[in-house]
Structure formats: C-alpha cells, structure tokens
Length: 475
Image (tube, rainbow, N blue to C red):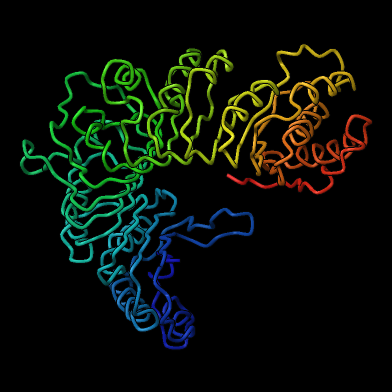
C-alpha cells in the first residue's frame, strides 16, 4: 500500500513506516510478484477511505527521501521480483496541497518499480515521458493497461515492446484506439508487427465501426494463439483473420453485425478452416441489439464447425431457433469434450437432443426452461416424468459432469425435477454442479432435488444415490 499521506510525513528511525514494515519481513527470496496500490488516506472498516479533509503541509523533500528509503527496503527484501502491478486507488481530492502530495507519489511510479520486470500491469496510472522512456518499461513480456484510449505515451509504451511482448491485456478501449496499436506512432504508414505476441485480451472494446478506417493488409500478430475480446472485435481485416487460421488455438469473441457479415460473405469462417483451434466461444455482443438474437442460430452453425480439433465449444447467452434442426444439420467435431451453453435456454428435449448428438462430450454446462410446456402446476406430474424417462431410455449421451448455470421454470421445484430427470436418463453423469448465482435459491434447489428423489418415479433408481450434487461454478 503506497499511501501518499504517509510518504509526505518525515520518517524517523523510531517511526513505523512502509519501509520499516518491509524490513521486518526479512529476506523473501521466493517472492516474484508485487502489487502496489497507490492510495490517499487509510481504509475504514466499511471499505471507504478516510482522506484528508483540509490542507496538508506539502513536503516534497520528505516524499523524495521516503520513496528512496522504501525502494531500497523492497529491493533488499525481495531481490527476485519479475512481475509488477501498479493500481491507482486514490480518490479525487479538490484540496490543492493534498492533490500535490498524491500526484508526486504517483508520478514516482517508475522509481518505485525500480527494476526491469518481465510483466507490468498499470491501472489508472498517469503516463509520463519518464515512465515510457524508462529502462523498467522495455523488453516486457506482458502488459496490462486499463482505460486504454490510444494516447501517444501509452501506445508508444506498447509498441516499444513489440518484439518481446507475449501477452497484451487492455481494457475499456475504443475501436479506433485498438487499431492505433498496429500503426507506428512516429511513422503512421508503417505496420507494427508483434513478433512474439501469443495472447491478446481486449475487454469492453466500444465505439462505432468506421467504414473508412484503415486496416492492415498483412497480419500484425503472426504468432497469436489466444484471442479474447469483449465488445467489438477491432481486428476484422481479412488478412488478419485468414492468418489466424493456421495458429490460433483459443478464440473467445463477441459478435456484431459487421463480424456476422464476414461470417456470411467471406470464405474465412468455413468448416474446418481453423487448423489449430481447440477452444471456441462466440456469443452475441453486449453492445449489439439483443432483440435480434434469433440470428444467433447461424452463428451457432458456424461456431460448431470452425475446427476439426475443437475440444471446447461455448455457445453462451444465445437465443436459438429450432434446436432439433440445428442438431440434425451440424456435425460436431469428434474431438469435442466440453460444451458450454450457459444462459442459452433449453427445454429437456432440446438438452437431450444436443447431448445425444454429441456422445463424445464429457462435460456440459446448461440452462433449462419449461416455457414450452405451459405447466399449470408448480411441479411435474408422475406421468410427465415417466413420459420423459420412457422417451430417453437407452440414449447415446455419455457426459460425466453436468453444470446447471441457470433456469427459467415455473418454480424451483420444476427446475429440480428437470435436473434430476437429466441425471436419471443419462446414467453416465456422476457430478452435477449448480452455479452459485443466488445462494438461497441454489440451496432451495438442492433441497427440492432431494425431495424429488423420494417420488415414486425415482424411488427405485438407486444409481441416483451415487451422484454428487453441489453448489460450485465448475466453468
């Protein structure tokens, strides 16, 4: 905790301070990672910070001396640090002298980082020329930046590490800011190639797609293996997407209309076109109009066939029309072992149709609904339960682990009966994990599963006693 108010005070040999506390820890040779929280004031028991409410006497020399003392203590105690995170947690204060104290401490982040790390995370840290030009921010293997806006200093910081960077994680970025990454800031016509980048994570990419935006005609990411994007995917140039076909292993993106147009018009997203892709997660974009969710059906068609070596397929948060037609027309890869359809509402018949068509799947995460049944009571009749048991007797489903993410049923009791029905008709299931969304409801679901177990339709099915039901987010 780098407390600006504490660093402004005069540290005496007898005074307990940040440096003396670290020295008391002794030599910590095994420590490889350190996180600095830049704060102002002290945390209260309720989580709020007690901050100065009046002028401080600003002591620039104290801050400089104390930072030097603190850095020396960290260097002596933890000589093998390779991973540094720096987060600015200080509140905005309108008192000029207080703001002066906080600003000087925060601008000393380069000095506090001290050594050259392999991995650097910066959250709400103001970029300075010193920070960008410092030896501590070159030859980085990993960078995480929050609130990336494509400003000069933060872009230059990323680009100066283009040859060594293996992981890039940026958050709250606009589409135009993301595209600036691949064009040299000093020579905008020159493409920046990230020759070592294997993992790229972009969260909450937002803004409007500009049809006149310049896109690369060659890939800036020749070795990328993992692509995760929440919001709009910035890099949709055919040259980039085509290059991904040979080396991308993990694809987790949200779709918008432009990306869907590429899906439907270009020959990029064809069956088996991604030769190394093992993990596929495609969902409807957060920023896109959810009322048109029916178009997720062709998205699911494409997703299931992208790779012949796929082991995990995630079709989350989708509204799918005509599941039986989807199942009959889509050939799921034989390598598929994990199927995640959380918050894609399925009836019992939908769920069974998918599981039967994918006997190779060992782990499935589902969300159940009874909407199509128009139930009058808050429970299934024995006749209805027996009807499902007879319909799916001796089916081909072979999953071992079932996740129940959510349900949209007339009552918790109906959801419990559906869950028990799935376990009953798929005898290979050994464990059911109920996602801990609302604990009181999940506990009620477990209680109702135990109650349903005593009903005549299940009473003689002793195998059910060996199945483990638990509250756990297995995904």
